[in-house]
Amino acid sequence: MIQLEQLTWKVAGRTILADVTVAIPANTYAVLMGSTGCGKTTLLEILCGLRKPTSGRVLLDGVDVTHLEPRERGIGYVPQDLALFPGLRVREQIGFAPKLRGVAPEELNQRVNRLAEQFGITHLLNRLPDLLSGGEKQRVALARALAAQPKLLLLDEPLSALDESMRAEAVSLLQRVQSEHELTVLHVTHSSSEAAALGHLHLRMAGGRLEIDSKV
Amino acid sequence: MTLNRSNLCWLALALITAGYLLFWALLLGATAAYSTPDSWLKVLMSPEIRHATWLSLVTCSLAAGFALLLAVPVGYLMSRREFRGKSWLDAALDIPIILPPLVVGLCLLIFFQTRIGKVIEMAIPFTYQVSGVVLAQFVVAAAFAIRTMRGTFQHLSARPEDVALTLGCTRFQALWHVALPAARRGMVAAFCIAWARSLGEFGPILVFAGATRMKTEVLPTTVWLELSVGNLEAAVAVSLFMVLLAVLVLVVVRATGEKV
Image (cartoon, rainbow over all chains, first blue to last red; front, side, top):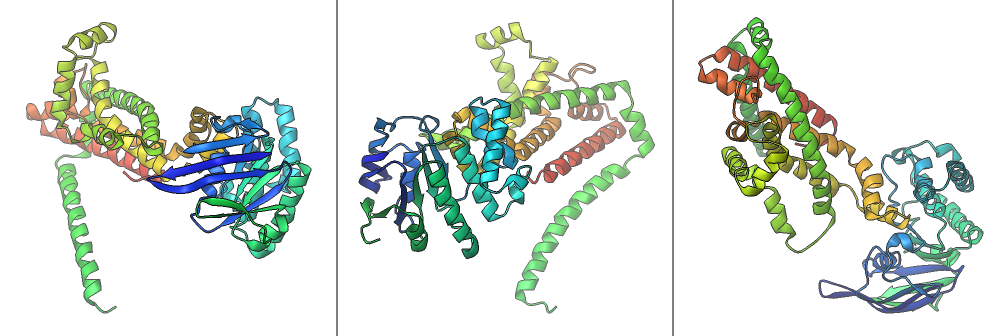
């Protein structure tokens, strides 16, 4: 469960997030909508520890993680540009987190192969990111985040670079991933259809405030 | 194609560029035509110049290596972190670039006469030593390497490093596993630029390390020594050799995709 308590973020005298308070139950697929520049990405970055809030608290399963480093939070993050590591092959991208945690090579290989199979990217394991299509990159980024076995997954407009035909496929992939890995997901999107297809909980951000969207 | 005003403007700019390049071609051509390839070879094979060449290659490589070791962390800090006084630090890092070269040598010479300098020299002697040549080259070359690495990191998105932090990396691990592999072309460029800068260094070396034949004589020192005794042919041969090395470095840097 994610709880945000009176989270505020101010920069250069401007309030981007104002007293954001919300609770997202475990195993929920939450979608967050709002106009460009309203603070959605900032909220995700505060959640995963890349930014420190001006005030307020972030609780994960009742534990205050506000002052923990990103690596200590167990949160997976897929940014809008997917941010694949340049120069690392798909196999190394997916195996990055397990290798860092000292997972034995045999288990690491199994984990990478299992995720690659689940995402349909087994044939891409030896490719570099530059040689992947938008959809393939998105799958690799998701597999890389899940290889760290997070409890919470933050997705920042992960489908924005995909065309319409691939988007439907990606939506069903995300649904499957969320249920199979029993994840709590917070997914930022501008697309109402994407939000309707995926979201169990609909959130809307406006004027720095976060509200549960009861209209959906 | 009709010559309208816009085309005339581009033509004028192209002529200015061509004129500048022609001037350089004439300079190098005149220098190359001063003597024959046979005499260049004869000069370059003399023991003193072979020693100076060898010493230049070794000291430049060491200075560039040390410069890169400094440039990576400083460049990363300057490109990724905002802090109070950053613009002042930025300006301070460029000081070796704007300081007159002889002043750099003088500063080094005076520093090693202070108490701290003398203590350092008890461990590693620098003044009028080969290590002094490396240090004199390093202090200027490092500023150029830092500029290059700062530019390299600024052009690389910080996002993959952020993701690495969420995947379990410390900041140092994110630098090591993600930023450095991505910056390897920039590192090659920074090394080459530092190397080329070290190769051309003369003033600080002359003042701080001296110009002793077969000891602290590097290629620029050779040019100066040969000129001072009126041996223009030897000075020309060494100069052309240095031009060749500089062109090779430029080719390598261009191949990395970085700009000098």
